[in-house]
Length: 268
Image (tube, rainbow, N blue to C red):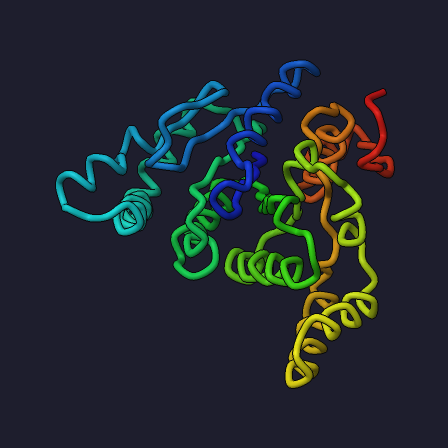
């Protein structure tokens, strides 16, 4: 049984930084993980790349040969990966054992994990190769500063959940860059009725029914829980990793223990 994280989220949400910090943490605790680059436009990495989509196809080559813009070229690259997925994955995974832990650093184009089936088909291939997979959805904490932006982030994450049909961990990234953490504390584990009241205050009266439907949808899918990630704190990275491990049943024999995490805690 293999294990995998599919690291997704909007452009600039900190996916590659998360992958780099996760790799460094695992090196420190002598745990083996392998980072896979699924972004054909990537150029620089702060982690060793175990597998690289650019060995199959790169964004620059597609833009030059087909005259496509960046967005169209990215979709083309991912569709090319999809067409060659079985051969590419089989060749790449031959170098790894059944219990390896892979982390896939994905592109930030939101339609790849909310509208088109490329990543969904990628996940199905991983499952057929006996991998337990978890989607790790990153949202920039600097974006979640009021209820309307929070609901927008929830809807984008929910779209990915529905499309991928995977265990899902939502992460508020870049907590270490916030100037005032109180701006997001109310959204880490909010009360739905308080969300609805705040949303109604900010929106025009004609949106009352829509607001109620949105809050009920968010509550029904347990989308009101976000895990804060402060990369300055090893305890924060450790907690996030434990949450994901629990989702994919990694290390069950080791009886993983998870404690409550307070973003204000200092490193132990």
